Length: 223
Image (cartoon, rainbow, N blue to C red):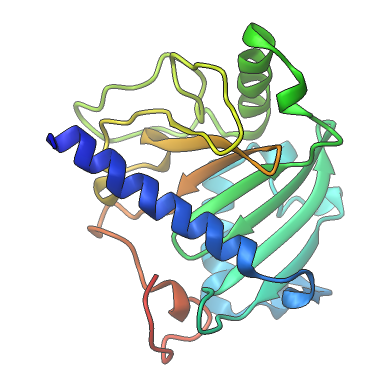
């Protein structure tokens, strides 16, 4: 197996584990918070920083004008600490789930039934949503990264997305070494719904942080 195949396999496993962790949380596993100030301080500051970097202001889950519903999930034996933001903006029903190491953006099927579209229409819809959501003005300091020709969040050459498929904007880039979130993102379809996954990766750190210590550094565990 060559280096690119190994990287793809490793990333696919990481993304699948994060998606699975979110899915394992039952509907009542998130506790609503009336004010975002109630979120543990480290996670709260982290969420503001990354959401401001990743999202356009009009679709940022911390835009108070959107009436976002916030909730928290404290880590269990098989799930990490998570934040959830549910809202409608730009004609899209969105559920944004944050872990310490990722931001998962899920598009409600009632606002976009991606699998009902065919061929070029499906690819165009994915690009249109990505352009609406993501902050294209953020600058990357990464040197030598082969950037996609598509919008931030999308592969430049995108085949038809199918259920269970995940595509990368820059498959040659190792997420463990990202200097800027926009240098690699993933998009795919899960349960018939379109999603995007962005990495919360500091350029000062190789790899990712302990996902079960986001709310409380004294906890044990990894993931």
